[in-house]
Length: 89
Image 1 (cartoon, rainbow, N blue to C red):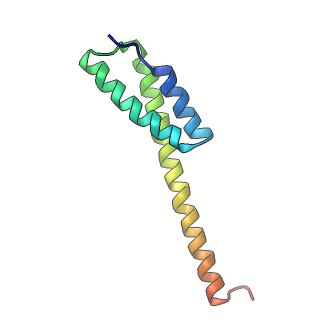
Image 2: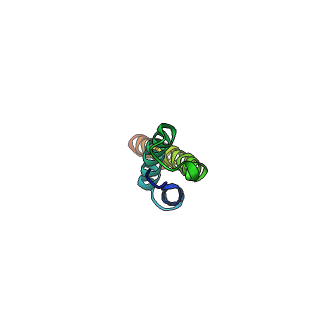
Image 3: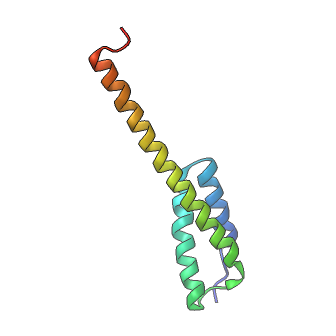
């Protein structure tokens, strides 16, 4: 039986939330895979709560990163359009 990677997944989720969102994506993917292995009995289920928490934090980090990209694109389009029509001159 494989040992769990719950601590690693939680750390990646937190790093994804605080520093860089690719770590959040990794936590989401690794957490999903590990939870499937735990359900199948191939991995130690003792770290299930850490794995679930890391997966959830990874999901939150990814969603926040995507929302920030969307907001940045909208602001860029707004200011580009304002500059094109001469607002503020």
